[in-house]
Length: 401
Image 1 (cartoon, rainbow, N blue to C red):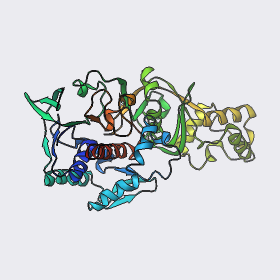
Image 2 (spheres, rainbow, N blue to C red):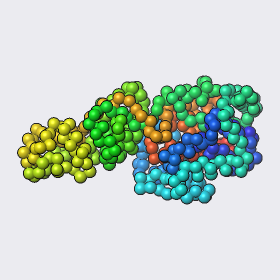
Image 3 (cartoon, rainbow, N blue to C red):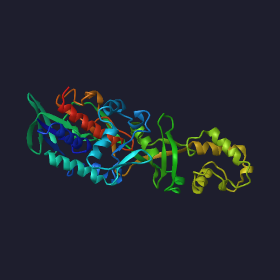
Image 4 (cartoon, rainbow, N blue to C red):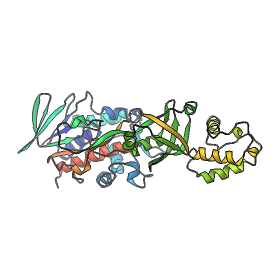
């Protein structure tokens, strides 16, 4: 059997290794339009490679996969996070699970993951051709003709793992596929409010954030930057609301609860307790907020720093409670988050067989990874999807149902 895998990313290379193990005599050619295979894996997780997640803190897969949760639920039964971790450990990659349930190689080096896959592929004889752009796939009576680099080769099966991109230009060779409009996901947000700029570098733990007038919300550590807001809370929100943010040109009103999810009534009660003290309002504040941050919040609530708690009028106390539980900022753009670029959108899931990932429109062609309309929040979930889908496609080709 001859198989072409288009795209040498995580899903494509993992598929190649597992397919060669299942069918040692298969001739596998991996076609990569870029110069280096697994280039994105090499820089993911800040170069440490967050290769999966324990999933122990995920109660509903929709929390991790805003798009594609139902498909992932089915596929993860075939190749789970636990099986993924065992796979890598069997390859000699020692793993460590952090307190946040993110799983990394103990070496903290993404190149260990890259080298493990490439060494397997080369040892088993999978051919890797870089700078090879596929221009056409033509079905024939006996398989599929794939054109690339001014040549055409015949294959029995084709696996498409070209990843995601804003224009999905890597899928021009399959023009009839239904595409869900791709837009960016996982990004930080610009916020022009000057008070935030004075707080650059501050991290507030377990901070709920939401988009006013919508149901989009997320909770996590929030990082204040020189340009606006970042950190897990914002990245998760950008994933959940990727399409809404794009449709609004990334200009929305963010609502931030600086009190770790406490209600306005709960905070008002806390402030009333503070109101028994003769100390200045700047010298007594919630312990998880820095003095600098507290000063900014006082100013936003119109409370003078020279006031004493026991002289603070009820009107100002109520206003302060409202601000620190529902502080609002208007965003005015997005920022790429390091190398964690992910696309919301891709080939519609209605186009594939959910058991095998084979195209319904193009028999013999399989799709896996971010080329599909499946994407996740940060934390190793996107790479887990790539490993799982690559594995499922390999098994589907090796053991047809």
